[in-house]
Length: 354
Image (cartoon, rainbow, N blue to C red; front, side, top):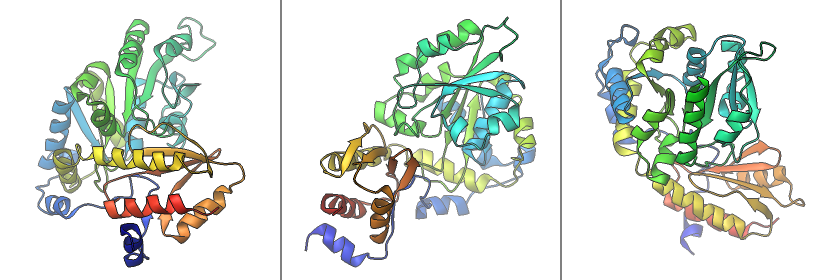
């Protein structure tokens, strides 16, 4: 019996959940940090651990201010509201999370429309931004006031922007008086994969949302980081959106622990994702595998393979993956996906009988 078979035999009821990196649970050490956190009332800005987390992230990105939010969607929606006025328009890629996965919040919360660009794996270029800015004196069209980027891209399969392109986009925004927001839900993956410095991002963007509950493995929370002038609005907007919280230091403590202990280990998730991608590419039942840069693998089945049957067959073996529509299937590696699970999963992919 090989290692994979042994793992399978001993763990028949163990689920290998690869739907998202949001499925992780706190480690024992993180739980200790949560339980021992010093807390206060954050609505009064008297929670010392929340304040510590916000200061830590502002310093990390070289920015002036930061504010804890319960979710990444709320942090993004707050940023959009802070940058815009009703009737205006933002520019984003057609696969952007702020458009596809935030419940129509751009229009509901801010009264703003989206001009969606056909980028490459969720990434747009400076040239595309220039081409899609509405003339500011042409009052028939919405006034363009904001550009939203996403790094890494979710629907784009964890793709990472070329930082030089981001710098070009910043120059376009400066020339046309546009705000620039980064949905950095998985910015940690980009920083590790490309060995980048977060302070370089702080120099470029007006606001950045960073998520703690995906690759970093905390139970909840995102933080909006930004320039002092625009972040003056953040507390009020968070309150309007229902995000005022009390003793959030318990969750902030998980974030502090994750930043100190879980960032560099993301390289392990990237390695596993690459190995999954390589195995999938060798299988006859696979039509295409997208390039894999970080912890997300997106692939397509051959036409004769039923997506529903494939996912059901995996589920029979206690393996969960995601369907993203339009024939896309997604696998996301994460903190709770162990070496043993990985060996077992690779073996199942190699031996899958369509």
